[in-house]
Image (cartoon, rainbow, N blue to C red):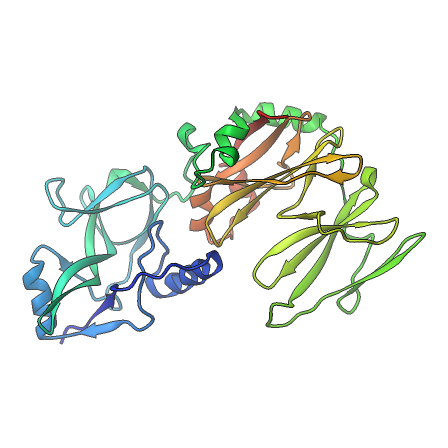
Length: 378
């Protein structure tokens, strides 16, 4: 007897960003991939057989029900354009069941001529116990083969540079930046001329028994890991020094987040203000910091700008970017070219999501794009 897994989607639960990430992790294991538009599912899949399957088919005669466990993908493709429709049948005249965004990962079951046969969760109205309810079940859908590729590295387009979910005018990317493209040659030439204000070092302080012992001329401080399954979890990793600022930089892994802190060598203090979302990059004259980092919980990029004057940090400005993220390798790193402009090596956010954070630098370097970001408000 055919058994199909159909999933109840009556309730929609709005969760904070860390919970969204957990849902995506569950979805990766259960469904095989996590789409741009996530479908809320119950924790227990509902199996239906016999008469209920026939009712489903009767109400939706065009739908091709799929036994998820019995039919495995033969290939993985990635959507190469935005708003690519997926159809109920192998024809553009067939019913459109939805649309995919660029870079979405497709589980391909068959390749039939100009069509990819893909497994997808489809929501439909069915009758159960005399009531019409909404159910989501696995079905076969059809995607034009020319709209997808086996290459997970999708390109960032002009209209995606400023793309954001942020509706606040004051922190919208287009309000704060002018952004544009650099050639690889332009980026590399400027990079060779650049002198970083940060001295990377992993050996100046060596962790012993999960403890960093910091000894300076006028003070001492211990940084001890707290490896636990609680909100108190913390793990330290020494990164290097900003000599001009007389401060040491540490990465701190936290329970559900991370940050970078700086320790003042004069008094061993760790000021709350000197706390960064990602690795801080200092401008040539030391007037501002910038950080750029990917947020896996929200699947977007955070740009943080913080002015610095007379050793004091000003108010931080945080900007969210939806379509691209930084990707640094030994050869290509973000840097300031003057007090208002920095250069960044980037990848499409969906590329990072597709590869599950296991991109090799050598492969990523073949697909990097390079941009400049110039502050409109100095």
